Amino acid sequence: MSSIPGFIVVPLLGLLFFTFPGILFIKYLSGLSTLLKATAAIFISLGFWICISWFISWVALPLDPLAFFLQLLFIVYFFAKYTAKIKEEVSEISILSIKKIPLHYFILILALLLLSFPMLFITIPPGCDTSMHGYITRLIINNNGLPHSYRPILPVDYFGSYSAGYHIVTALVSGVNTIYLRHAINFISIIVYPLCLLAMVFSLKNFFSEKTAIYTSIIFFGINRTYIGTIWWGGNPSMLSFAFCLFSFGLIMYAVQNRYSKPFYLCALTIAAIPLVHAIPAITFVYVSFVGYVILLYHNRAHFKWIVLNTVLLVICVLFLLAPFLIHFKNENSPQLLLMIKNWQNEMMNKKLTNTLTDNLLVSADQIKYRIGDVLTILSGISLAFLFYFKKYKQIIYSSIFILFIYLLIFNCAYWVLPFSELLYPERVVYFMIICWAFIFGYFLTELENRIDKWSMFNKKLSVYFLLVLIMLCISVQNIIDQSLGLSRETQVSCNRPTVAAFDWINANTEKNALFVASYADAGMWIPAFTNRATLGAHMHFIHEVQHIPDTLNASTAPRYFFITKRDMKMKNGIMGEINNRVKLFSNSEVEIYK
Image (cartoon, rainbow, N blue to C red):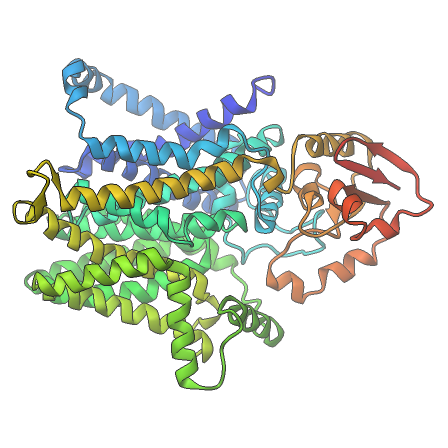
């Protein structure tokens, strides 16, 4: 297998792990389109592998053979039970039926392809955080399961508190093999964003037509400054966790609307995956779900007992799935750590938080406007005004409750009144605010479409609805194209092909316990992921920064090498001053290595 190119192996394994076992459960989701069933299969599958990997590691069994054995069982069962049925359905497909595919499906496919476009060209995704996710994935591969420590990359002997679901998926699609690690990092980093768009469609479909859900999702996903821009700093696990939030909201609404219990239990997999992928969106999800649950009970009063009973069973299932993580969880908060997080949250609010209530209220509102962007802010305001005109007061009230509550979650970072305030990062709480405004816009589009006859022009060949959607889709698609082209330029990422060649040299020619000195926010950050060596330039989360891991590494007596990049040489700073009188061991167009 190691002789097969990574660009073949990784997408193939990704397809398998994204499809099975979720495809076995979509029979419980009757009435949904093929698109929505495919989306459900993906998220249920990912939720399963993220949860089951914790159980596998809990009982100290190797991840690789068990995961692939389970995958084989799922595939054999699927083909044994469903092959005949699939052949029967495929025989009914014709060229004429393909011509009947609605236009909004083609537009969605275009958006998904544009979001996936960088996979064809990118060497390594950008972002300091991405390099950390890379070396955590390497630790999972080293251990053939969730690791017990961060060694040899960091001198940290405890791992259990970190949400490693994103990294588990990356390891699985690499075949739990370092040969395919780079391709797996690229694949998962990029594919998170098309998956988030699909999750948004799945969630909105419970409230609008599929066409409106698709148009609204593309517009609000592509235009805001937050979602796609997350990849530039490496917040891909946050976006995947948020995607699970969106999908879980949608699946619960589907179960309630159809009064069908089985989707509740399937939802346990995807809800448990939220904190296992990233804790920050998870706590916001809990708060927002509480408000949503109260509204849900009020709106479905006639089925109060049924909803409460299934909710209790759902919570029990989620807690069971989280048991291995919760058992190994260790509260590593300290006053110093909490102060660092509070300062970080203030920085995310553009350092404008003060002791004045009025100032902080305005700063919180400005943060929302900045993250959403001027275009969507104006569009959402217009949509809200038209809903008043259309007398859609119920939708206005429900949406306003969510908007106000999420606004208060962001405002809370000035005072830390709520429990787990350290996990309410304002720039990621905004994820949920954007989807609230998307609901308002979706209601507006629905009403506008229903009034096409009254609002048409140009001899009814072009409606106001069509013109508005077309303009907004063009802006959104243009933003997605700009993002994809930017990611595809190697000058925009911290690592390129000559750098990968330097990593190969390190693997072949340096000691296993070697310590590398490298500049922060540069290609040297990837040394731990691709060489399994420690480096002084590694990115780490707040807990490890508080523990002064760099100081511990500096005191190390391990053989020391100096990793100098083209950026160091050009700017004549960073670690350039530390290579005087040292021996040059390696050199190419991008990297020089000294000892």
